[in-house]
Image (tube, rainbow, N blue to C red; front, side, top):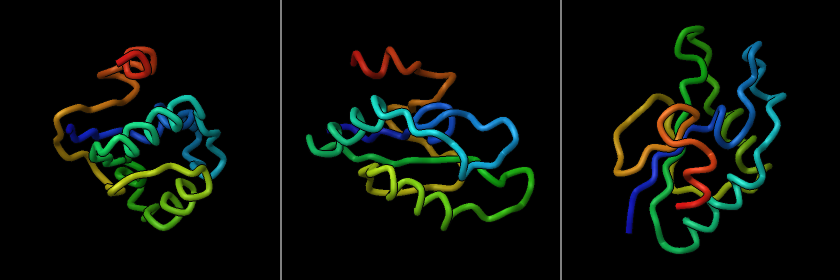
Length: 100
């Protein structure tokens, strides 16, 4: 089993340019893939750097949003920790991840 560290913005949803994260639109294909990995027994850790520069605490809103979208996970992290596999809009693309 692997531990997947997956970025929220730009991966599980569109990257909102004006930082109004609650208007972000989910990427259902990616959410389905994450849920599939979760159901298969892998560890899913989602992360975001929301609020890093502004100092705004987006944790509660982010968790509510992920719950609304139905994203299964073991942990929601504010910041960027390490893992076996990191999926974001830069390291591993959506297509590479979906075809893994």
